[in-house]
Image 1 (cartoon, rainbow, N blue to C red):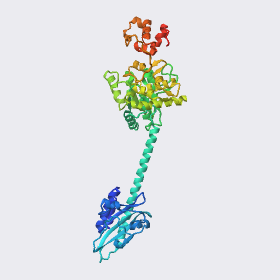
Image 2 (spheres, rainbow, N blue to C red):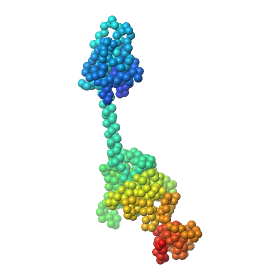
Image 3 (cartoon, one colour):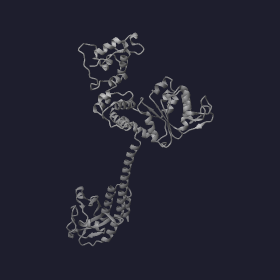
Image 4 (cartoon, helix red, strand yellow):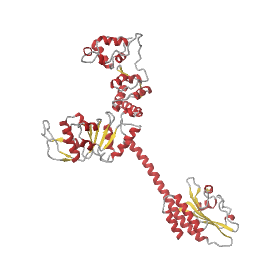
Length: 531
């Protein structure tokens, strides 16, 4: 009973099957005076020694038996105990480990019992013990003890297998659900494999589960509203409304009416009662874009609503309570605005609970190919086309700094796809549309740090020596520029002649855009020569 108690205590102390079985065979070896061994059925269908007292790792590795092979294999197939009083006289005993060697004056006996789970054998518990040749041994007591220990080992092994199977199933379910969630909550138009965007996605999933106010910061066109929608649809409020409002698009009076609503007759034109965005977003999420553009007077009104969670409609006196999660967005430096007194510090601290910074496209250039392909596929679906991007066109996109970020990239891809006549969007189509050089357009934005690696508009260079530029815009006199800021007729003709009548090169000499020089040519009635 003491042996069984110690075995049960060891088996219940840990789920580490290897360690607990090692301690069990040690206990059996100590109490029975022999070498205990536990062999378990493997996925290959063979029996393999899991633990054995007094055996080296090499000897345990040799202890592998097929079903029905040797004494151990027969115990496994018959699921019945077996006793071999003298292993030296038993031809079925294989001596595979080479460890069961008795003294000349003693007999080594082998006693084995099956490890059962229900009616199925999953292994064998055995012990080899020596005894003097003239000593009678009662093996019934040893078999009974081994059977009780084998039952405990079987329960533990079955529990270990069950827990392992459940863990594997849970891991498989987790991986499957993660893949489903990635597909279900993929952020449309905010595709990103870059480290910066992966950090943004991680932050979105982190903050979505709470109800904290979120402030999205980043340049225009980085996808702040899409991120706001992702936060909403990943949150417990996903079944409730998502309401958005651009604060910069409305005056203070209209903004108050849009957010808080108004009562009938509260002002001229208020013919009916109207709910505001706060009421419409009750239980859901309210997204306020360009929060940094609201007036100081309206900042006070908004602060009260955020603090008290209640407001009155324009022209009303009844307080209205709302449960709204607020997400704000701005491309303005709010800290600088606070220091200048343009933005209330208390409102800043109220909306700046959790901040997510969206990186500009120039800081995640590895996302440009994926985004370009996404926008091109969108264009193909909407226009029933099958366009593809050429490597040269993609190289041009990678050279650009994209001041308008993802929004500008989408417009560029759509414009190039619209002007493509074949099935491939090539570099010239992308770089020069309607006789406009893409590199000059970028220079007009101040975002072309280096020249493109291809020649967009090749043209013959006259042998007559000419300056690189005729003169920047600020070198023209006011009477020459006029209201449109264009050069006079003579200077324009001179630039065209020096550039071989290539308008794009003439525009470069005059520091103009192709559109401006085209307008100047039409204005002065200059007939462009064709070569």
